[in-house]
Length: 417
Image 1: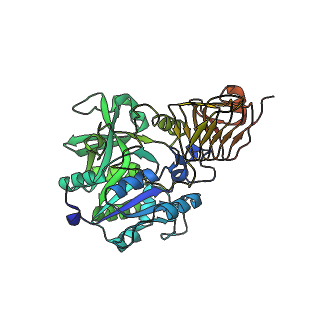
Image 2: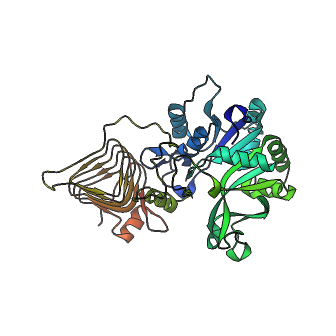
């Protein structure tokens, strides 16, 4: 890799304006990147940590929908030293190109071309704000520079039979992209040369050469057929010009990640959000939060350490295969396969199984919760049950395709009739 002092000038853009409808009700009053994850983190902490750890600390976050809690989190948490010109700043939709909201990810960048004029970067990182992963972006930029690409797309290897879930990258000559197709059928794609059963799927992370990006955005904005989307419009344009390359994520070596398992998950739905939490809690987790050499940064609430104690009526607590955040108190309850966020209380005789409990949730005495996500400040009354009666849950709460029961922030628990 290039030494830091000789590295080119880079501006990082994090796209955080998505409405997040598929994550409802967690996004009823917050932007998707502000959704809590993994105890005391928020989704946006993951891309920002990757960029900051890699030394790219001139970062703008493009926001749009319900961005207040996201803006507060950025202002309190991501305060970088300005002495060397570092910053993380949110940029709301300013309607510089007319009285309209962002029409898509490409339009969001087009409407903020003034940011490139101000910073005058050589290269531009464009990262999504709602993916869980680690990547050393320095290595991806080195690959981009070495190939002379106009754009480099980060690709992750997935099974060929999953092609309909992703934008699929088909390399043609080395790392050059021969085609980029959104959600093709498995029989429409060709597997990777060294593993025909795998394909390269777009991770939604890109590096653009700045001059190429500016030209591309103007060209796309002038088109009447555009959907104003990076994956749907900009990348195919660059493929057609022969200037698009792919960076195979499995080549990335993250400091401190000794086993080098490459994890990436788009947590855009309730089921993927829930599954990503379950990936955190195994004895050998698919995604390890405990890598001190490449930490995920955040600002945690000032709370006492978690406490697991006995209850005079129900006896000792049982906790295993779970994450407990600061301020959690388990008093004579049972917690299995779950993630408990700051301030959660599990009272005597209560059972929590395969659940994600966000800040300050209270599970009352003798209550039972399983296969569920409870947003902040939900109070489950003594003896209540969530995740046990499918008909009752479907009638009163949000239930995902895979059967995960979700209660909105502060929602009331409905007793069965």
